[in-house]
Each structure stands twice: as C-alpha cells, then as structure tokens.
Length: 118
Image (tube, rainbow, N blue to C red):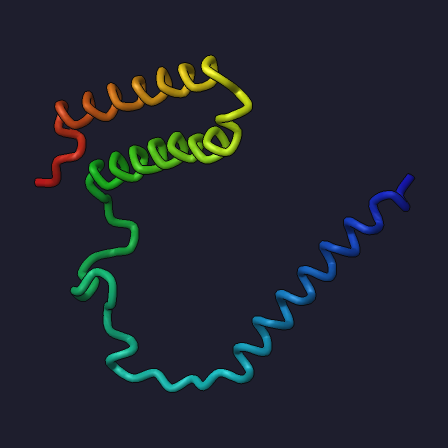
C-alpha cells in the first residue's frame, strides 16, 4: 500500500531539494553590498518609530477583509464566463442574482463609510 505514495513523496522531496538548491545558489552567487540607500525604508516612506508589535487601526483590517471578500467573489466570474453557453438562462439569472447581492453589499459598505479613509 505504501508504494502508491512513493511518487508523491518523490515529488515532494524533489521539490524541496530543488527549492533549497535554488535558494542556496542565489545566496552564494548574489553579491551582498548593503548601503544606506538600500537599507532605507521603501514602502512606507518614513523610519520606523515604534515597536513592531504596535497596534494598528481597525480600518486596515476592515479594508483588507473587504478586499479579500470582493476579490474572492469576483473570482467566481471566471469559471462562469467559460461555461456561459452551456448553463443557459438559469445559470445566467443565478449569476445576475449573485452580482445583485454583491452590488447591494458594496453599496451598503459605501453608504456606511467603511471605504472612507480619514
């Protein structure tokens, strides 16, 4: 029974080995010459001034959750669009209902000010 799992274990082992080989080769070959400009903050634009465990405003989390929610729900459109000819009118109407509910939720969030950034 274990011989059925051998190709999977071989594939996992090969993938891990290749990944470790690539990371090792990259760290061995790449130059390491840090300078003040490379070490300066890039994304935020200012120096860190507090502890890394400081509390964030809840709006960051709210915007992230809303993005994930709408992003995942819009991802349902791709498989639906590929089979639109096969599912007929019932599939089309069910997706329109889904999009209407999604739009109502988006308008509700907009009216409540969840997307406002002060």
